[in-house]
Length: 498
Image 1 (cartoon, helix red, strand yellow):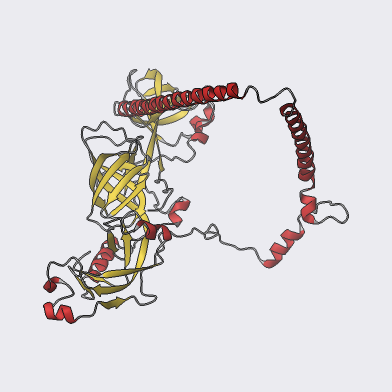
Image 2 (cartoon, rainbow, N blue to C red):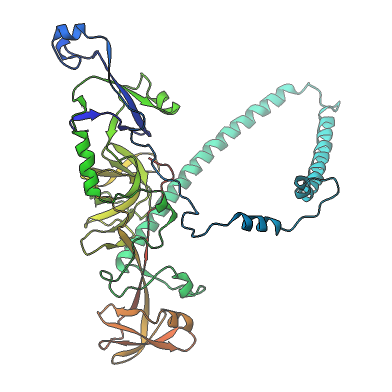
C-alpha cells in the first residue's frame, strides 16, 4: 500500500488473521519475461552475477506493530476500592462450616448427598439393565430359533432397508419444505413490520401487565433532540472496554500514510519472498501450492485494532430485501471481508446524536455502525447478505466515515394516547398509561400531538391511567397525544473476530 513496502509492518491475509512480517528476501523472478526484468534492477549481467537469495530487510524485535486486535476487559477496572488482606481473611473465617462425618475430607462431605443419589440410581438402572439383558440373551438362545428360516429373515431385512430409504427421502423433502416455509414466514413478518414502521414510526404499545415506569426504565425524555445534554461516556457497555479509540483520527491517518512514504522500503514491482512470524497451522495448510493466489496486504498503523466503524450506505435498488437492524451482514471494506451486526441511523450534520432506524430504507442514505477492524477513510464498502442457500446477494454499497466511538445513536420510542374529553386547550387522554403511578412518573416530560401541538401532563385522573393535559393551542378529537422517550443503542459484538 503506497509507494513502498516497509519493514516492521503487519500484514492481513484475505480471509485470515493478521500476522507480522519478519524478513524480505530477493530471489530470482521465475516469471520474468527476460533477465533484465528480474531482481531489483540492473542489466542481464548484473542479474546473472547476483546470488540466488539476498536478504533485503529483517524486522527488529520490539519495533513491530502489536497484533492485539481487542483488549481483554477488566471487570474490576472501574472499582474505587480493593479489599485488604484483613478483610479477605475475615470473610473466609465468617463462612459457615459444614458438618462432615469423622474421617471424611471436605471434598467427600461436599459430594456426600449427590453420591448417594447417583449410586442408588445407577445401581437400580444397572440391575434392571442386567435383568433385561439376561432375558434378551435367554430369548435369543432359545432352542426354537433355528437357522432354517434364514432366507426369510434376509428378505425382511432388505424390505426394511428400502422402507428406511424411502422414509429418509420423505424426511428430507419435509425438511426442505419446512425451511422454505420458515424463510417465507420470516420475510413476510419483516415486511409487515417495515410497513407498520412506515405508517406508525417508532410507536409502541404500552404493556398491560408491566408498569410503564419499569418497562421503559432505561429510556429518558429530551427537551430538544439536538441541544439537550447527553454524555457520550455515560453507561457504556462492556464491549466498549475491548475496543480502541484514536484521539485524533485525522492526524493518525496522516501519520500512518506518511510512514509508508518514508523511503525505507522495497520498490513497487520487485519480486520478493516474505517470511511471516507465528503463522497458524490452518493458514499454512490453506496456503498450499494448489492454491494459486493468496492476497497479502500490508496494514497501516492501528489498522489491526477493533473500534466502532461507520459506513455511509445506499440500498441497492430493485432487490426487494428487508434488512432489519442488528441483522448479520457481510462487509467488504477494502481488502478485508468480515461479518457484522450493524445498527442503522440517519445521516446528517445536526449535532453529535442521530436517530436509530429500525429498518434499512430505500431512498435516503443510511449510516451503518458496527464493531470492526480500523480502516482509514476514504475506502469503498460493499455489503452483502448471506441467503439460506449459501449464496451472496448484494444489498448495499457506499464508503467509510471516520471512526468515532463517541457517535451517539438514540433509539426513539413513542407512547400514544387518545383524547376522550376536550375543552379548548385542555383534554383528558387515555390508553397511554394504565395506572396513576405511571402518570406521575412521566409527568415532567413534554407531550406533543400529530397536529403540531405541545403540552404537558397536569395530573392523573382516576385509577385506570387517565390523565389531564394542557396544550399550547386547542386540540381536536381526531388528534393523537404522544410522548417521546430515548435511549442509546450499540451494535452487537461479532461472534468471530475478523
